[in-house]
Figure (tube, rainbow, N blue to C red):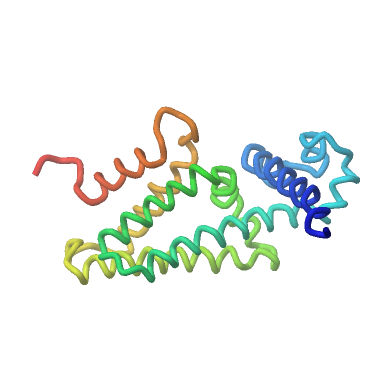
Length: 199
């Protein structure tokens, strides 16, 4: 019976987080007030505090939940029996899927990680950055070692290229548009792995 009673509360919390994520992504975390979130949710500011003690708690839950899901997917790829190229392709696709499904969360992380990282409660963001780098470096190292990727590849530079070109897509990609995340991933992988010039 308790679980059933909790469902409306959990659903409301999820809805409030969805609204807050949209505002944080659009206006910026610092420029979004509790009143903004409450107004967009159709409730009084005081009512918001029945669910969250601060907007910091809200962005913390938004980012930590999203990153837990993303890095869970990366871990599955790293531990899979796929070959090095397939793992790299899967990681790119998972990243674009994340942009499609969690556009606001990705935008918040891209725009606010440096600012939020200055607070102790968000120290994990730097750890996630380091973890992300480790994932891609591992995939690229495996690709070179297995012969899938060129032996003269600058691993660090390639990692930065992939990171910047994939995640910056959150600035222009729109879910439900003419380009699906799968199509964008296909094109990026073609450019990344096959180049754009005639052989």
